[in-house]
Image 1 (cartoon, rainbow, N blue to C red):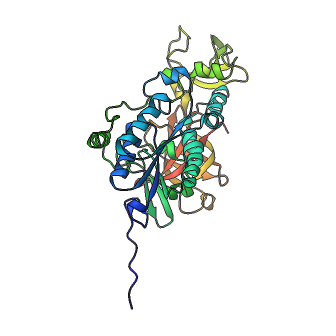
Image 2: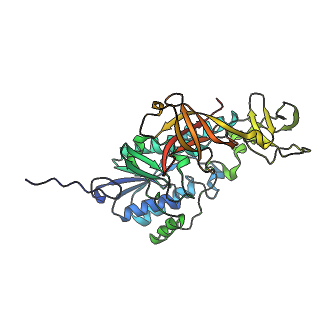
Length: 380
């Protein structure tokens, strides 16, 4: 009797030849996603490039290093022509505004410090674009993110990138298990960005030397306040700057110009010690400032939690993990105490400064590279 031989998996972990595997590649016009598309085409996959037009205002189109504007759509198209695969541009402007930009503006008005890149991944790229990829009969969708996906005993797992300097796990914590089953991240195992640029040069891509994108794509020159004032007229109403005792020590030109932990540009002179923004209260239009020590906290309330661990989140009284409270900070030891399937309180073993509502708190396994999800910081 003949024995059944297991089907050999291709490099994307799918049980069929590359030529019979359709991959939609999300192309921003930058070097990372361009290399992913070129690499997969070179391996023989049926590649379809898709670029999202997310916004279209003059300042953004003229800005270097912003993704998904006119110049970048042109660059993505040139890469597709160079490598010989089809490329489509989808108009997601209204969707992007509703799902990302409006919330960004409202969060700032509420005194929070939002991270719109996470919402864009969560609501636009990994929800709407992923659905479009399935409509195109793609077997999977690939992106240029520096993150790794692995198959574990409990299913698809998310892991930090091999290069800590490029790791984008903080911005991808809300990716669900179901999405992970369909997503692929070919660059996550590369040792450095230099490898990516070397591949771009190898494939003769016109974006090989293109600079990395900086800042938030729809915020020209990093001027958040100007964008918010345009979206929400009257948002920059002036108010008082007060100390921790509530004493008025100055005046400001709008709460939207300040973030938790800010030190420079407060406009409060004559103080013996440096002052930092401790709290923002949009309702009273007050900015509270104080010494750096007042920024320290060990307790962080979270909601909208996405849990990627194997056991149900609420099945344990607490989870010992490492957490990252800003994208630029290293993971620190903490305990998560679940309050429900989507809410929790995180207790840091050592206090952190400048923990701000609107930022993400991302969970990591105590050992190894696994990402266990995360949640959104709020006031509680």
